[in-house]
Amino acid sequence: MQRSGRTDASSEVGLLPLRTSVRSVRVTTVASRADCEAAGALFDRVWGMSAMVPTETIIATLHAGGHASLAEVDGVVVGATWGFLASHEGRLGLHSHVTGVLSAHANAGVGLALKHHQWQWASKQGLDFVTWTFDPLVRRNAYFNLVKLGAKVSEYHENFYGVINDGLNRGERTDRVFVMWSVGGSPAPPRGSFVATAEWAVAIPPDIEALRRTDPDVAQGWRDRQRADLRKVFDGPWRIAGYMADGSYAVVPR
Picture 1: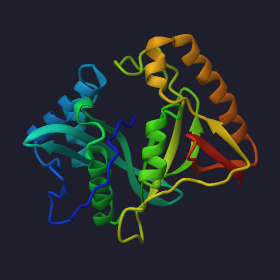
Picture 2: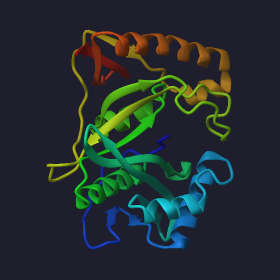
Picture 3: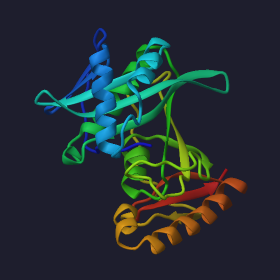
């Protein structure tokens, strides 16, 4: 459930709370009850609902070793992220469940600053990876996650979250791809690139979010076709190698 900005970022790691600066963006690790409340309020604004991630859930997660952060521009909170510890094949990492950025600050580097700060926190804790899910129909998120961040698609799940009654997903089937972002053993966050060649490709609509507003039936048709293609990938001898310059997923043999 990621919503992120997509411009280059530079970052620096210090003593907790960590801070990351990208132009005028300041990212700080959540460290107080007030910070938890601010993160929860940001998520509610982005997703158009109340108590999407309750304050007490953020507090409990952080007490148990998880992570949350706030992004500010000129002292105003414009983005946040929240995640919890996860394990995969005997390795420990962070699962980033929510990253949100206010629409007025999209394409301003906020999402990338949040993700790089998250990566640095995970590295400082000695974790091996950061994981999250996203809707494979959202082209801008596919580009951001696979090209800007260099995350790798490892799983596909149909209707993963079931029915979600927030302002962004209401009425949608919540198909998701699961991505893994390598942390352990790297001195800096990885970066991806376009995949030049593939055996075949899985198409992504240019702007599924606009299409859902203007022609829901066509949008649902995109879900049906892409679901069939992704079943073919993950049920067969294939894998998604990344994102191609034409806005599709590159499929290659495993």
